[in-house]
Image (cartoon, rainbow, N blue to C red; front, top):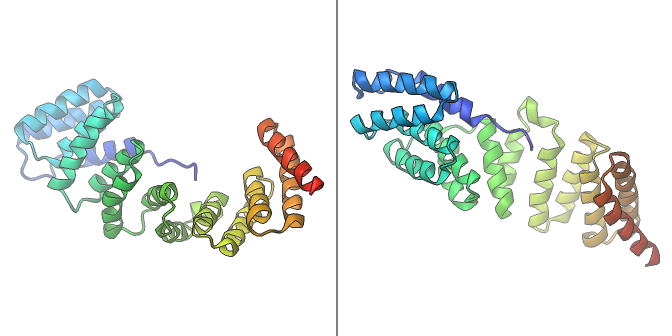
Length: 253
């Protein structure tokens, strides 16, 4: 699942659309945020950071100002500080989907996968039909071999952009594999292969599964041979070398 949702654009747009909607903010805060949103849209992150700080000085709990501040910090390579700001933002807006998603995404960026699941699950309770959230949830589950990820990946299949993506089925297979349900894993690896028959990753996964777990050397050799051919076609020398070595071992056996 290599498709990455443009979280920066999404959050910046959310900030721009939030002007004047907070109710509690004074006019001067709205003006600061309007200027800050424009600076963010132009990629002027130092300027947007300064303006968001000025807004927070006047209205410390302003959700839009907190989001703009966190986004600006992240884009200035201060992601640790951005995480702290977003943790505070989720306390101020515990039922806001964008805030929860952005916080979870930021924790994912920090490779804090277990921690990321807490806000992401809350975001899921608010909106179960957001494909990019489902992608992020499933990635966190894959990193920790959590079977709950199967539910999110199955839900992704309802969306046209994902239903024919081999990566989705490959990921489901990996999670079944992690649960030692090799039959389910084989079924989903096979679906992934059908979606993209010449993908060497899918072929290698099937080969290894039949070789080392299903104890089916004939099927393993067949998939290794397919994988070898496709790897050679695309010039993947490292994979080619590994597959050749394993095929020679199987031939000796």
